[in-house]
Length: 249
Image 1 (tube, rainbow, N blue to C red):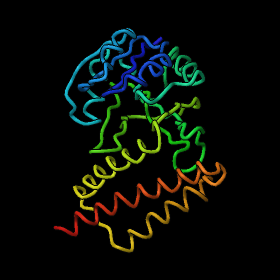
Image 2: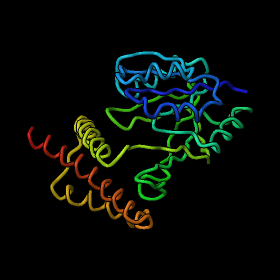
Image 3: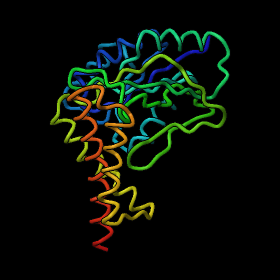
Image 4: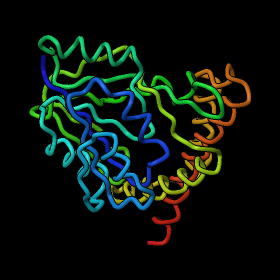
C-alpha cells in the first residue's frame, strides 16, 4: 500500500484544525505548515501529533509545494483547515492506494456547508478540486488566487465528497470576497485583461442567472438566493476593481 501524507497550510486556524485532522486519521502522517499563527494553531497541531513546520507566507502555491516537498511520502492529500474528508472519501482513498493508482492525480467533489445548509447547487457544487496527487508527477501552480494542481499525466476522479466549511458567518464571507477580489483584480491586470462598462453590467448579471436559475440556487430557498447574489457580487467587485485599475493607467 502506498504511503499517504496529508498536508495542511495554516494561519490562525485553531478553531477549525482539530476536526480537519480527525477526518484524516487514516493517513500515515499529517504535515502542518504554519505561517505565523498567533492563536495557538501550531501548538494545537503538535498536540494532535502532526509534524509542524513554521514558515513565512510566500503565497498559496509555493506554500503548498513546500509542504508536499517536506512530506515523507509521494502520495499527497492536500487539505485546508476548513475542510473535512468524508468517511466515504476516506475509504475510497484507502482502497485506491492499496493497489496501483492509475492516474497521477485525482479530482474530488467538494460540498460546502453555509448558513445551516449543504449547498448542492450554484457554482459551489460539485466544485471539483484536485487534492490527491503523486508529487513526482504533479505540483501546485497559480498566481495570486485560485491555485491548482497541474499533473503530468492522467487526472482521475473520485466520488466521495470533501466537506467544506468556508465561512464562519456572513461577515466572514464578505471580508473574504473583499480580499480575494482585490487579489483577482491584480492577477487579471498582470495578465493584460480589461473590462468595459458593458462588461461590468453583463458579467455579474450572467453570473446571477447561472447560479440562481441554471445551476439551481432557487431550489435551496433563501440560502440559495444569498449564495447566488454573493457569487454575482464577487464577479462584479473583481471586474470593478480591474476597471478602476486599468482606467487609472
